[in-house]
Length: 342
Image (cartoon, rainbow, N blue to C red; front, top):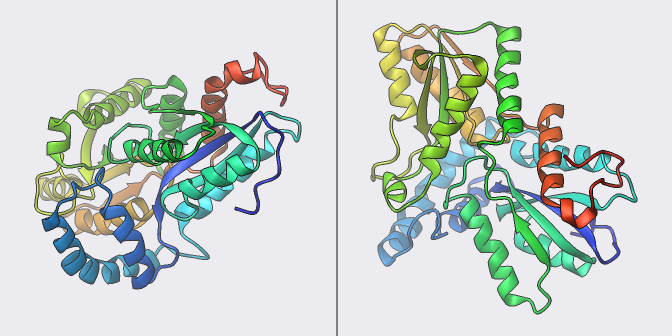
């Protein structure tokens, strides 16, 4: 955290938070990451039986397989971390040195740690924070876990900073426009396939039954994008990926739906993953590689993955405007970057 500049009291930190990633594509690094991630009660309800399963089975078997998957997408670092660094670098370049705002990146699990970043920010004089979890659709398993980290920090500090957490943005017109235009651009460059599939990360069905609004938010995003693109209900579909364990998760499952389509004679599919703002293992390996094979092996002929919004200029403009709109009363009606705060 030494790269945080010394700042005057009253400066604002905007923290983009993503889920996390291992330090390296190795079984030991993956094991450390999974132990932290899978022992979070927001992700999987903790109990003695789960502790036993996690430590005797999951962390013995899964790290080696997951590490091999990471090897297929890893270059100098994890794509999630590299793209996140690019995002904050570009966003900070859009601000001036006298501007009121500086962007930072953090992870709920792994490095750079959100918990450590908050301590470093306060030590350097940042006493106003806007926390932006990069999950358009709120879920207790993702954004809820960010709230937990922030609130635990507040409980342990005497001088609590003024902070806000942006809960979700799945219905923001700017987000829908940027996501829709990314699909249009993909079609322009690659042609349009027979079906468009929105594959969202899954959560256990029981979590929705307990009140998690995630499923409805996913359908809301897909419906809004379809309306923007002028699609009929028969021209787009929603599914859920990345299930874990024996319990029932949200359906239809992406891999099973692709198998069904291939068997029924569907020849081409465009697929995107709107639950992710940044490409990662679940998009680059699970969807773009594994599920491509699933569909082609079932008889499909063309499978085209539409990348996440990542560090595209349009995405960065939206993220910046989202943050600025949430600090409007902190900086006045116009930021010191010279751009109006809408």
